[in-house]
Image 1: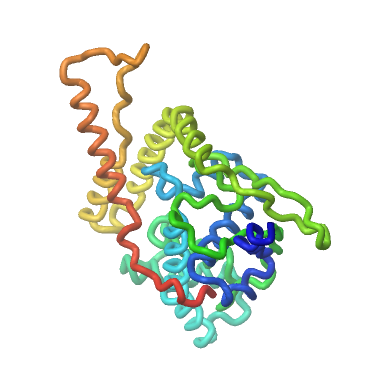
Image 2 (image 1 turned 180 degrees about the horizontal axis):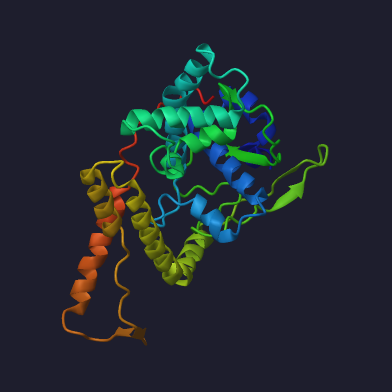
Length: 316
């Protein structure tokens, strides 16, 4: 029994920062991913569908966000904030423009300056500028105050995150925290009260073989709803691009529109009954070509182009 329990070490979220230096790179990735899932479970104002969208690789692909990619995204976003936003905030304070300003006022000043620099226009920047052109700025607006992280951030719930002593053979399918393996429904992990101070922790991991079954069932149930959501998303983004006419170049607008059209889902396959699809000439061939085109479009928004990040680089 002692040999079995030594395969995993429990780490409470509240002490993760102090234990970070003691963890190996793969343990850091598992701890981060498990922390995200546990925090998602505490956001009771979100629906299961909204939770599932947060943990997708991209909305177009519908694939679960892999653990290693979540780590790389965290590294890239952290680096971009430190190099693209914090120096501008620092410049405001050094120039005396930030003194006595609220956090929201500081944000408005940075966004206004960037809008004038990028577009070479004067006038108040449109609200869509922050969310479309400068999407990482929302992270700064929520989690920072001035040059530092907001010291008044809400305290996290402190479950235990289990990390293995040995690196798993397949990190992509390694079950973490409340993850059940499908792309929807971040199901809260089973918990038991630990003897030490009644602290609650993760009791067990889900079965990987069951994860695959759950994923296939969910794909069937959500296929049509996901297709409709993708169509609506493309339509909304297309309408949003109209607001940027005259702000960004026509070539850039056309490229973005083309990417949106290529991300459209494939035409639904013919209705099947008894395992046999109806015959309609070369319709199956056309559907196959459309599906391949859609898969190719999804790869356009793949994260493989993100720069490789050093696992041993400091987290904070």
